[in-house]
Image (cartoon, rainbow, N blue to C red):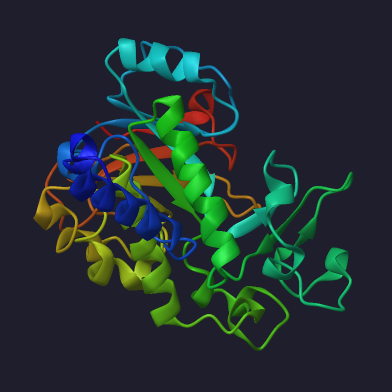
Length: 318
């Protein structure tokens, strides 16, 4: 080699090694892009932060009395997200990390064996979430999130959230291991998913989000809150007041100055009715007075029905 180019040798070695290392990464391992995790700090969500949650409207007013907007990742455009941020809102983008939804634009990226066992009729699969498929073909199945192909799709969804300008993400259905009692199956979501499997997957989601400079919410997964609070930036829970489960958040997220967002329903999807009121006492139907929480430590929204829309909110606790 000419001495003229000899000085390049050590740099070429570094570059080649870096490329080879990147090529050899396991599918689904956290991936960093042009902004490394060390060079950025995800947006914070301290306790007392106010929020609204709308997964059905593609556009909501920018002047709602809430600091955080939680919206659907797919149905909300990048331009709309920027509009919310320009109005001073922190934007959280929702997607399902634990189920296969056959109506999503990236549904064809999931191999069939990640949501349907070989040889079974997928339309009648034991892995179907709950016990329903809508007329017209919309169905949802529990995923076997231990498979590398699932993590590959989820990494792409997190990248989409970053590319659209989301500040944070809300990955839903991250408690598959606890749901075997809701379907006709003796196994965990019929995949044999264990509590340890779930912890590993949820921590992977958090690590991968943080590597993309995205904050991340822990959605429900109530039995693992204490173990996961240090990995997540805030929490979103449905109906912990109804089921008297909110207390676990006090000594985990709240103690770490992290927001806890709670949603309750006057009438849930099954038709059960609770006559929530805006009182701040500790009576059973006082939505704004959860026992043991200082005022503002948990921000509760009460929806009139199970439709998650800003214009379906009946009570706002702040």
